[in-house]
Image (cartoon, rainbow, N blue to C red; front, top):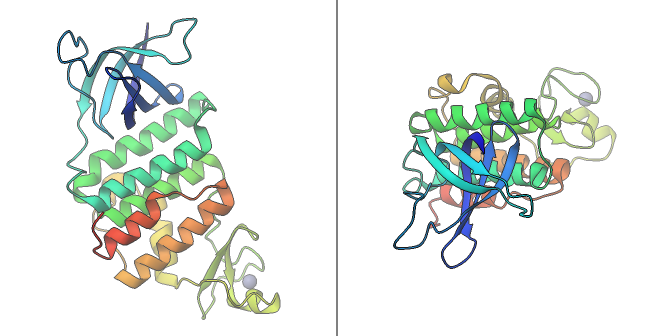
Length: 259
Ligand SMILES: [Zn+2]
């Protein structure tokens, strides 16, 4: 038997009576766990179904012939805040899951990374009721990118070192982070999307300040928020070779579209 502090990332059907749970374990990162018989109306020994983004402690059994560890027992430690009624926050956590899945699904994280990511998710989950959804999303993705080693450099132009750029900044995977407009012009790349200094500050602060202190951070105006998400999405696409599908959903939720 193994004990794992986990955060539930996703739930799916494994069979008619069993669930498959994707969880992030503090010990070993992404794991797909089978909850046998959890959907049986009777003789379900596992108790209530864990919900997405619950923090829980799971006891698992690993059968030598089985690909997935089997859930033996789970104790809810911190239920997910009412995320389903807040689509912005739900999409924020879903986009963190998309990024985690791109990096670690099928590749066990080393203990250090597993522990760091668990801390990021648990910290943001605990502060979610007080923090704006867009800020949660930016904070989560930037922190996960940092653990992964592919966060954009945000202290000045990554190409020439300039620390101001009156026309705004591009965030370019080619250069590793911010690029000033002078460098863009020099290289004939004037068509890159730009973000202003205020949005760069949002990235820096959301990535750097403790989750407990995120609450006072105000989201940018609607069109600047959309722009920030677009830049973040493009970075994830280049850095991780995936498109976190929840980011466009979050943008739609910001604009008031029904999920
Ligand atoms: Zn430059």
